[in-house]
Length: 429
View 1 (cartoon, rainbow, N blue to C red):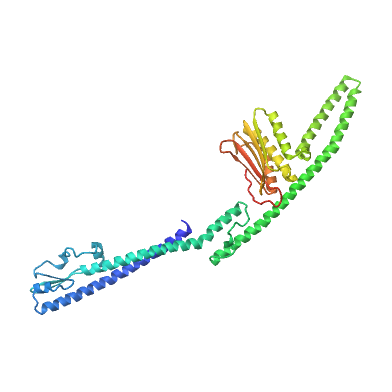
View 2 (cartoon, rainbow, N blue to C red; view 1 turned 45 degrees about the vertical axis):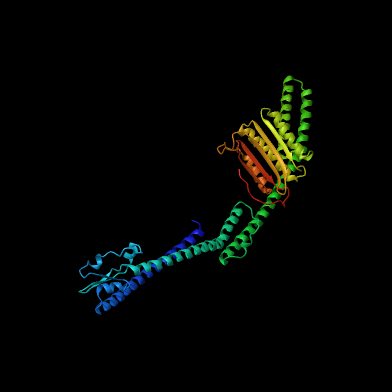
């Protein structure tokens, strides 16, 4: 049960206990009052009868609470209430617990009956109970409103903590309750939550900055390593290829010529391997062509290699003006997304999309209609995407990989276009 309704229920319990206590006091007072009224009425009736008033005349006087009967009539304990005079329920009369009192004279029997007095007590108690119930209902409504208003900051605290857990450290609109207003205790808690959010925001911003610098340093090192491989290893392999070609031409025996051909094939394979390493370290094409053209050609190349798969590529907005880390991240994301789809999902269709979203950044999607996300794939599957998730996170973005509603797998990433882009942590796979 919510705290608000617990408070209201506790208030209702106190109200019921108060009403029950008041009713018990009223019943106790009513019991004494009825007995006193009966004693007074019986005393008056005895005095009038003692003055010589006959039974018929005494009955005609209409003395309240007094019944005049024959002297040989039944005992008062066995006499039922007069018809039409019992207005209170039998259980209430039994609760009052006052029995008729009789006084027998030679010419008549005087019986003091409590029924009229009990009926008056019942009427008064019913009216008072209805008034108390109405007032209690109003008070309960007011208590529920006051409790809801007093505890409303707790709901806002819960929403704020959910935002913090989701990595959103920016204060939402209307969050002034965190620093003041309401109960002092809740205001202090809100102030501490606000301070925690501010500390987390600063720490997250610093982590983003350091992560971005780390990505830039890694990209710079890879670019320098790729340049060294291209300049040093490439030139060496080219010279070696020329020398081996010359040796093969000058070989004096068929065996020497064959060995020279084998060495030349090994050098050519090593040259192809170095080209693949260079592409992994730093796609050189990114330095010469717009990103949209590079991505379109990459998808077209996969289409030529996988003609059985239907390919779709869309690009929206200005994606060619992205900064260096974002350009390389987009390229790697699409590359890894297509590779994972072809390797693990056996799709018949793959859709690649990229579009500029303001002010968040650039959105990358790779969707397929394959077997969907599997959590029991062999070790090593998905390591490329895990690395890309870390890179996207370092750039201040988020990456999700999940099942598509109609089947298949969907990869979606949001990458900020600059360090000042909104910082929101949400990375799941």
